[in-house]
Image 1: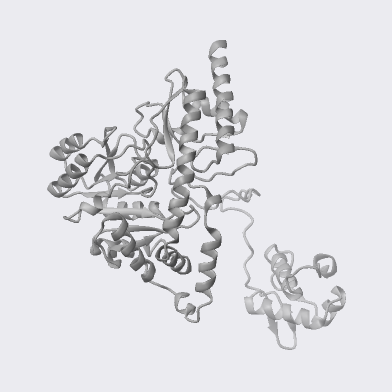
Image 2: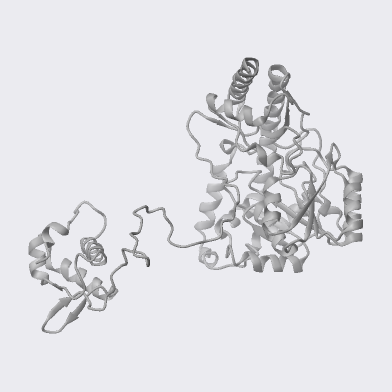
Amino acid sequence: MFPYKTSLHINRKSKEPLFLQLTNQFIHLIKEGKIPSGTKLIGTRSLAELLQVHRKTVVACYEELAMQGWLETIPKKGTFVPENLPLLKSEDYKGNEVSDNIDQIGFSYYKSNLPGKTIEKEEGWLYINDGVSDGRLTPTEDLAKIYRRISARKNITEHLGYISTQGNEQLRGVLASYLNETRGLSITKDHILITRGSQMGIWLSAQLLLKEEDIIVVGETNYASADITFLHQGAKVLRVPVDESGIDTVALEKICESQQIKGVYVTSHHHHPTTVTLSAERRICLLNLAKKYRFAIIEDDYDYDFNYNHAPILPLASHDVHHNVIYIGSVCKTVAPVFRVGYLIADKEFVNEASQVRGFVDRQGDALQELTFAEFIKSGDLDRHIRKVLKVYEKRRDLFCNLLKEELSEFFSFNKPKGGMAVWLTLNKKYTWNQVSDIAKKYKLAIGNVSRYDMAKTNHNAIRMGFATFNEEELYELIKRMKFTMKDLVNQEKSV
C-alpha cells in the first residue's frame, strides 16, 4: 500500500488550489517511479479521509490527472497509472549516472562568444558608463499620465492586437514630422521603421547589407557594439583613422579604389567613443564617395540633441539626395534607456525589407508605449524635457571637466566635449587602464571592460567616461575615489 498520507501534503495557506497541489504532487511521484505504471490508486473517498479534504477536491485532482494522461479510469475496476507510461530516464545511454547539477545542459549548442552586458549593481558603488542619461530626470509622471489617458480610451482595444512590424503608424507619422523639422529630413512615415533602440537598427542593417567576407569600414576607434555586430555577421571590418575632424575620408577613398565595400558606419555628430564631430568637408566627401562607389552609410545619430556650445549639426541624412544613408536614432538616450523606442530611416524598399527581418526576431514593439511617445513628442513635452536636461548636463560637464583638470591633470588628458554625455579620457602612458580598474575596485569604483574602447588594439590608452548620470555630489565623490585610486597606483609603482 502506497503511503499516501505521508507522501502528499496540503498547504492551506497557499494561493494554489488544493486540487492542483495534489495534482502536481501526484505527477512528481509518478515521474519518479514512486507510483509505478499499472498502480491502482485508492478511491476518492478514502484519499479524502486520509488527507482531511473534501471528496470533490480529490475528484477534481483525479480528473485533472486523467485529462493530462497521467491516470486512466477503467469501468468497474478503478483508477490506474497507465501501463504504457514510460519512466523518465535517470541514466544516460552509456549507463552512467546523470549529474545532479541542474545547470548542466543536456544538449550541445553553438556559443556566440559575444561579450556580456549584464551588470549586477551593488549599493555604495559608482559605475563608470559610456555616457548615459540620468534616470532621475526622466519625466515619468508626464509619461504615466499620457499612458493612462491612452489606456482609458474606448478604442484602445484596436491597439492591443498585432500591428505592423514597421511600428505604430501614429508614432511613425509624428516622428516623420518631428525629424523633418528638427533634422532637416524630407521623409514620410513609410521611410521609418520603429526599433527597440539604436542597436536593433544597427543589427537589422548588418543583416541586410553584409554576408560573410563583405567589407564594412569603421573608424579606428569605434562603437564596440557596432564592431561586434558586424564581425558576428561574418563581415570583414576595415578601419580608417579618426582625428579631430572625424573619420579620414582620404583613407576611405584609398580603400574604395582597391576593393568593393558594402558600407561605412559613422557616428557623425559625436564620434563614439572620442566625441569629435565629422567636419562639413568630410561629410560632403563621404556622401560623394557613397554615390560614386555605391556603398551604404549607416549613420548612428545616437545623441543628436545634446549640444552645449552650438546648435545641433544636421545629419548626413539631411543632405542625402542619392539614397545612400541609413539613419538610425533613438529616444532611449534622450529620455531613459528603459524606453526602448528607436528608429531606422531609409529608402522605403529597404525599410520594408528590414521590417520583414525584424518580424522574425521581435514580432512588434509595445504599441501602447509607442502611442505614448507619439503624444509625448507631438505635445512638445519631449522638446521641453530636452531643454531642461541640457542645462543640467552642461553644468555637470563643466564641473566634471574642471575637477579632472584641477585634481587629476598629472594622470589624464582630455578635450572638453562640445556635446554629448561623456569625456574621452586619455591616461598617462606610464599606466594602464587595467591597472586603474583593478585598484579602483578597492574604493567601490567600477570602470568595467576597458578593452571595448580599443578593438583595433592601437594602445591609445583612452576610455570614454560618462558624466551625465552623476549629480554634483556624486561627481565630487567620483573624483575623490579616482584620486585614491591613482595615489595607490603611484605608490605601487614606487615600491616595484
